[in-house]
Image 1 (cartoon, rainbow, N blue to C red):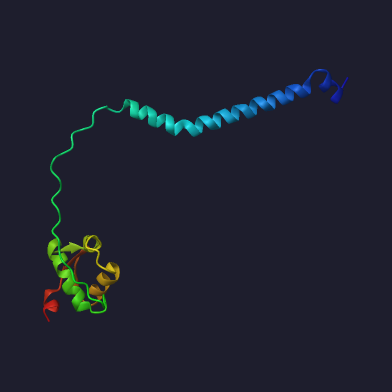
Image 2 (cartoon, rainbow, N blue to C red; image 1 turned 45 degrees about the vertical axis):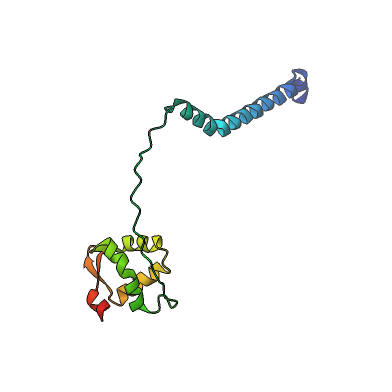
Length: 144
């Protein structure tokens, strides 16, 4: 007896179906276990974490001083006006300062077009490079 006859005689079709079912079931269980792994790890971390929270410090950071700005409508068309607008921020930063710090402060104070304005201030020589990424405000040009 050979071929399909032998397979049928020895229940080969049932064994093949059973093997495929076992493999498929194993893959389904494995994928479920992998999907639940983050939840399981989070539960373990919460269980191992200390139950009491560290005391919160009563002191809060000092609030930054408010600077009132009157933004011109032609911003940044009038570069001299923009330099006067940026002067208190630069004074607050101290000189020399980095452009990244100036950019953060202008975003904090919600000034329009900070990249464009800072670039224009550099091109108009209101911001002078001191080397190594440090800049100062050209007060002589601002006074004119």
